[in-house]
Amino acid sequence: MQIINLFKVTEVLLIYTHEITPRFTYVTRHLFVHILGIEISYSSTVEDFIRHKGPKITYTRQPLQNEFFIRSHELLFQQGIDELAIQVETWDELPCYFRTNERSNLPFDIFAAAFFLLSRYEEYLPHVKDIHGRFSPRESLAFQHNFLKMPIVDLWAYKMLGLLQQRFPDLEATARNYSFTPIIDVTTSHCYARRGVLRSFGGMMLDLSKFRLKRVWERIRVWFNPSRDPYNNYDFLISLHKKYPVKAMFFFQFAEYSTYDKNVSTNNNHFRYLIKSVADYSIVSLAASYTASEKLDVLKEEKKRLSNVLNRPVKYTRLRYNRVDIPHSYRHLIEAEFTEDYTMGYTHEIGFRAGTCTPFFFYDIAMESAQPIRIFPFAMHDYALLRYDSTEELWEDLDKLYREIKKVNGRFIAVFSNELLGGRQRINWLELYESFLKKYHA
Image (cartoon, rainbow, N blue to C red; front, side, top):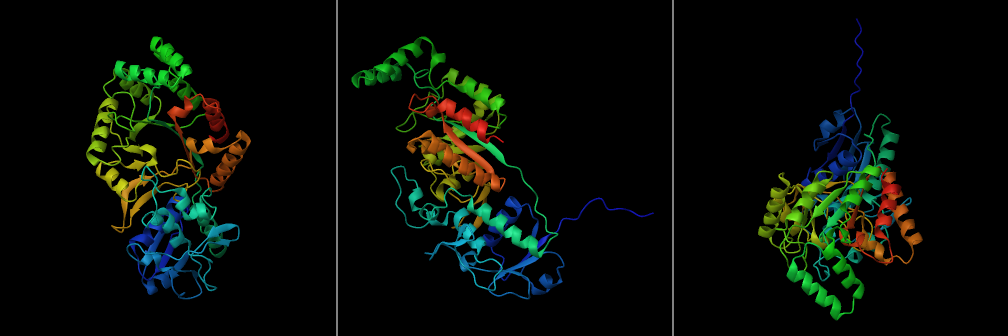
């Protein structure tokens, strides 16, 4: 009786290199496993490489035979930080750097190029920080060479895949699906309500002193009916997330009052009830305060308090004002036992700070190892949209961003702040948010 094998054996791609380093395995796993869904193995033994009958490539200075060869840049075999001479050129239509030579099947070493972006290598180099201690997008290679709005690492990976499949037709990538995750950043849950007598009275006096009569009227109205607070849009947002089925995430600040942290008191029962009610419909986690991003003990305390309100572990976080300080911020998050971070992006520029729309693990260059925290990079923060002069220009750029992510079936993560969604500016933010969900949720 003939037995028919119904299960196709997945081809394993063997990669030979002269030295298997943590940097090398880190970046190749991101490109092949996380982006392309291809199983890989490594070898630094020539005999094993020659015996392998499946698809294989070499990543070293010289090819071994007539195999698929990528000439290696020295970056993945170094340790620490050095000044790098980077010349950005084009690979067909894609910007790229770290040119190889005519014997290489790829004209650029995309492994080293991707590591430079994913590790945030440039943020270890001397640079000028802004008033909140942040790395400026204008300091980045991607901004300076006009590829910030492209998930360039993912695009490189798919371009490489096409060339590999020409050589190895049986090499199959695992198709992934486009996904969309809207994030609601709640650093100020209410504009006027739930703020206590002294803070409310002080706010009233400040508005009167500056003749902000519209705000005075809004305050009085909300005092008599707290449900009319302009930031109280939670039921409406949840209804939108059901209408355009998305798995939204809410990040609530749960911090003591300070110069940059002015949310409702953590002891306010109405505020606690709000958090628990939103958690019934969406993922809720911690928007770490400005103070917590600098002080580990405060970060741990905020995490513990929010966990007690939710009666479940808190594993995800965002940092106030997107204050990522490489590598110290992620060391603190790991020490506080967070497993996922949603801060990797720029507040005032749309695009991909780390060059990818695929979640990746943080690589600590000082420790030369991948760390146990997964980074979910966002492509857009709503504050970046304030600089647009027209809604036509705004949607044109967002449509381009969406198309770039769809090309690689990546993850579109967008951050909307509770303050803007509840604001009364020239943009109707709630209408814009609904249009955003309608256009990009699938």
